[in-house]
Length: 180
Image 1 (cartoon, one colour):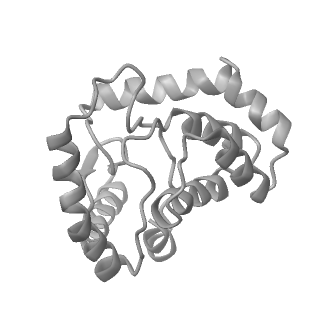
Image 2 (image 1 turned 135 degrees about the vertical axis):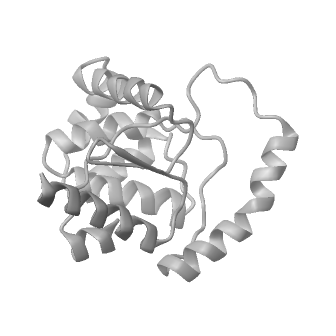
C-alpha cells in the first residue's frame, strides 16, 4: 500500500476486521496445520514481491484490542503510524497483538499517552462502536478474510495480490473518475 500511495497518490482508509472474533469455535489441529504449512509460501511471496521479511506472531490471536487501539490512534492523529507499528509488531517482530501491554508500548512509540490509550481499550465507547460498524460493513461486503481492499466503494480486491493488480484497479478507478 505504501508503494501505491507514493506512485498514485491513493488515500487509504483502514477498516477493522477481526482475525479471530471472540466466541469463535476452537481452531482444529488440521486447519492450524494447513495454515502453518502455507506460511513458507506466504513468506517467500512477501519477500519476493514486496521485500518484506515475515516473522508472524502467534496464530489465532484476538485482534479486537488492536483494532480498538487503531480507532483511538486515528482520532488522536497517529492512525497511520499506529497501523504500521501494529503490522510490524505482529508480522515482523512476532509479537502478540492481543496483549494490551504490547499495544500500550506501540501506542507510546507512536506518541500516544499510555493511560488514556489503555482506558480506550478497556471502555465500550466510541472506538468499540466504530470497530463494530466496520465489521458489519465487511459482512455486508461479504468479506471473510484479509487482506481485502475496496477501491472507490466499487471494486473489491481480495487476498494478497501483486502490486501490478493494485495498479490496474487504481488506474481503472482513475479513468472512470476522469470520464465522469
